[in-house]
Image (spheres, rainbow, N blue to C red):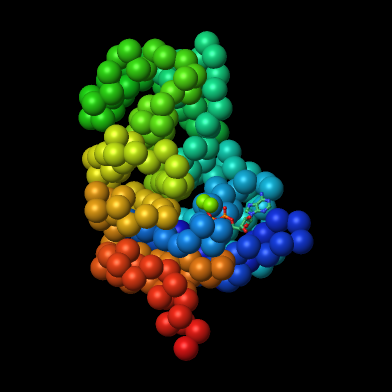
Length: 250
Ligand code: ADP
Ligand code: MG
Ligand code: MG
């Protein structure tokens, strides 16, 4: 599904990603861990196509074609979802109306008509029930006064509705209280299928007790320095990143 080859990227004069290789197949959950400043968020932004980053070498291949030249919207329409892609507050636009627009824009990009209202309603009902989201939440203004947990709920709801092939969840250190943690992990586990893949980016091992990854990769200074199974996350939790730095410099 996703193949990243020798990816180098950065911002202005600064190199941040220094040769990333990664292969993600349908049905897999990958975790990317690493200390603060190692390039985790940059990697997710570059996959999603954020224009502030410049790709200086390598390739990102999604479903058989290079997406290097595609705009973020085009990547989203192709089925790549990045959490916190829409973190803006939009007073007067409800959670539901926002997602309706997003779905119809995606359909339009694929040459389809708007989703019929009854079908949309059915989808909203189905997904909100699955994720245990109540009606009141759906009619709130987007992100306005949302708590950390509510922001996560909105994000996971967007993901459920858009049914991406590849979801990238960049779980920054802040905002992951126990409530938010459960919302994210329940959502991911319920939405998981053999046809989609998830890349979870996290600083902490704790999230991976709830979302059990098939593969764990450690990012240090813009490079994946170690990959393994879920036990690698435990090892990191126990020994810390300094252990790995020392091991690698020997
Ligand atoms: P992580 O998510 O692992 O904490 P980031 O990808 O956010 O790491 O950052 C990696 C490095 O790149 C850091 O040194 C950070 O300061 C720098 N960086 C990332 N984005 C920008 C930006 N927009 N402008 C300047 N420096 C940036
Ligand atoms: Mg950071
Ligand atoms: Mg980050």
